[in-house]
Image (tube, rainbow over all chains, first blue to last red; front, side):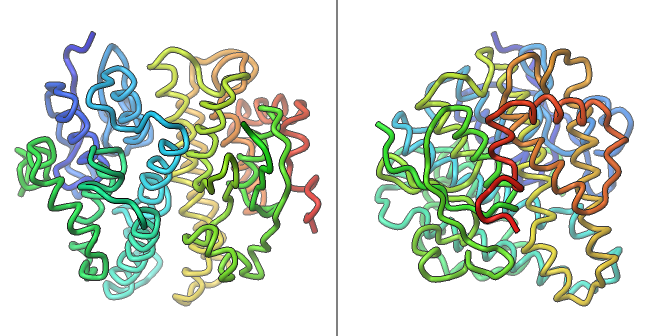
Length: 213
Length: 213
């Protein structure tokens, strides 16, 4: 049973964006609870009581509070199997998950707001901080691009949307924010275009959120 | 069918350690291929041909090369369901995955060898670099500790080993390496002790690998 679903997020949070796409794809209606990351609202005691880690997103669903966007997406996929976000075959599942984890583990957390703030606190200037973020993202997208070499179809892995696409599209938003030249990965841009043509992705985009600035 | 399983790893790689534990728990025999991280062997063209990301581990299994330790562990759990590394109930699965992802996403990749080398390249001194690693690990372990508040049993989530334990134990090795005072999390130390009493964990420990220095 899915009722009273609340997503704790922020329009510009890439990890929240992933979960918005998943909820839309699964046709799950949800209420928004916004926490302004740049104002530090994720550290307010009220939100820390919901997610002690003070990170976005958190999803209140089925009487529980779930954290970590990848775990949330896997939960939604297990409870609402259609449309499936993972292929059926185990090796294929592992490859889709690995792609998502290149972004979820090795890319986004190394260039998020908190890390960049820590770099500034150590005395690095804006050029160095932006350069850091750009290089991390370039490494991540290079890896993603290689992981789908030889794949065909509309999306990262064939003609069905998978977790890989849910993680790729928000990361490309981040890439642009830090001035990364996306022309290096024509295939990724092509996939992004196909994804954004879907209502579930378009509605989840940062600029279409009620808290967008 | 599982034959000719090869783990590309390094004794001190925390992510390789997770996969070693999983393989041992599942009773899967494997051959080691060692790549010395501090000598940069993960960047050799021969290894980049196996894992273009140049990160450890990679697992050759069932005719495929799998990357990303979390995806690998989930694959092993799907193909060899006993002993299960995730609970059966979806909310419980999501909570175990979230715990593992606090380490896999928010902690380890922000304090790994590559990140610390990049900090040094930006002119930070050893004190600052070690302080960075220690703070990232403390934040991660604080979050882990809170995520299992109210849980009882021998391991992170009850009396069965889960993915959470596979990710916790290697992270504690890293914590010690950077001088983090683990007394702050008595529950985590207690869980570690219970895990290391299991042959599958003990055999996977860094100091028990053939390439240990």
